Amino acid sequence: MANMNLVTGHGGTEHVTAADAGMLNAGIFGGGQHVMGVGNKFAATLVSNNKITISDGVLLMQGRLARINAGSSVDVTIENGATGYYRNDLIVARYTKDAQGVETMNLVVIKGTPSTTKAADPTYTSGDLLTGNASQNDFPLYRIVLNGITVQTPDPL
Image (cartoon, rainbow, N blue to C red; front, side, top):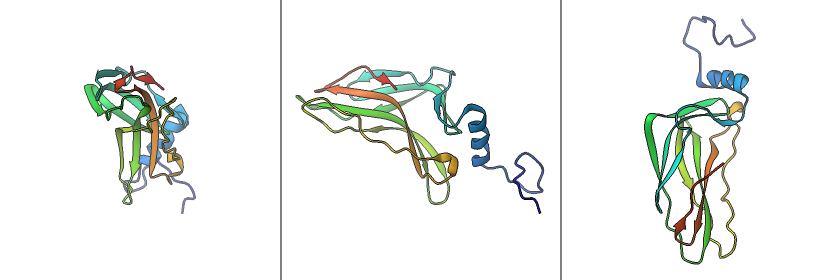
């Protein structure tokens, strides 16, 4: 009986997993989080005070590869600000893994806390996908600064 997992060898049954592919990517590109130089690199366009469009791109999150297909985009919604308050929201790529091991990735907005003085970024989840123990990890892509009811130009992170 073998004492190693021969991932790219014929073992008699299907056995290559997403974790195997993720470890290969992490070994080649590093275990961090990167927007790759492909497509529009998730360019953000402020459409209105409530809508930001994220263009196509490819990212690598701790070995997990995800993308918005070429020529496509995703709209995210920013909740209204309030006169006299400042707020920072974050647009993140959110990885999740459910109890059955099904993995997904989506763009989500993490709403910050309104303040009458300087706004702070909201907290986000940092999980370790390489150990297989994380059920969530957030990759911040943009800071959205709200000055009262006005949304400023998206700030790439």
